[in-house]
Amino acid sequence: MGPMDTEYFRPDLAHVHEQAFGFHADNCVGGILDLLAPVRDRGGLVVEIGCGTGLLTRHLVGAGHRVLATDGSPAMLDIARAAVPDAELRQLTLPDDPLPAADAIVGVGHVLNYLTDEDAVWRALSGLAVALRPGGVLAIDLCDLAWNTARRNTPTRGRVTRDWAMITEFVVPRPDRFAFQLAVFTRNEDGSWRRDDERHDLVLLDTAGVPAILRQLGIEATIGDSFGSEQLPPGLVTLVGTRPDP
Ligand SMILES: C[S@@+](CC[C@H](N)C(=O)[O-])C[C@H]1O[C@@H](n2cnc3c(N)ncnc32)[C@H](O)[C@@H]1O
Image (cartoon, rainbow, N blue to C red; front, side):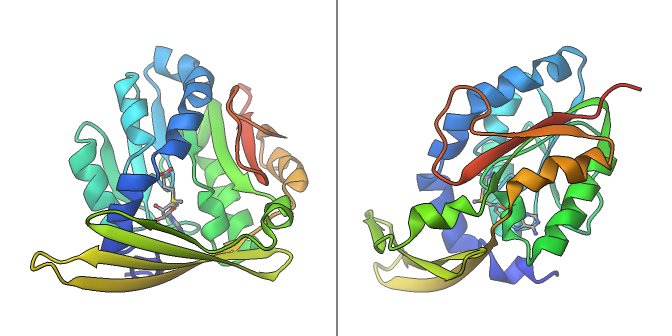
């Protein structure tokens, strides 16, 4: 077990994520499918990083892609396994678990920003670059330093349903870090409630510098403000690129 098995996205939060956080993948999927069309036409393998409960995965599989969906959290993968039985799923923790060779690498929900520091992000990006085959497509989202500018003084948020409730506090410990402090309440079968707390620390990136790093690894990529025509939250950018055919 790596550290992320116990720290991030444990079962109660995984359940809430599946129920309440599909909007981001739904928003991004149109643009991502357009970018992936050539990969589907040649029957290529799409590797998804940080697939979570499979909220993007189900769209990829539904569109006819061959998908290997990966995540570091066993609880998220358990839900994905039930929700998307046609996807191959694998526990894979970035930055050090190697990715299999891929014709496309995709991921939404700022997966790389969950890593511990910039060094770990660069290691993960280099792993992605190594795994991407010639002609392959890279499409992920990343939190830029601007994420914090847009969220200074964001008030605490709460959501209550019959079976769960979640309170989210937003913490800005320094300009290049952001954290969600989550209190997750889940109704037990006997009607009582249990509580689980998670803190998700994000490392924010000067994303403008990422294409130059990837170029040294043979990937031509650009930072953008959408995968297609969707509107992303402030401070969230796209990294879209390819490994050109030799
Ligand atoms: C905000 S969620 C997004 C999940 C999914 N992509 C979606 O859009 O619903 C971030 C995901 O990244 C995964 N993750 C965080 N750190 C990771 C790491 N070091 N290696 C692999 N996955 C990680 C989490 O387990 C979680 O499923």
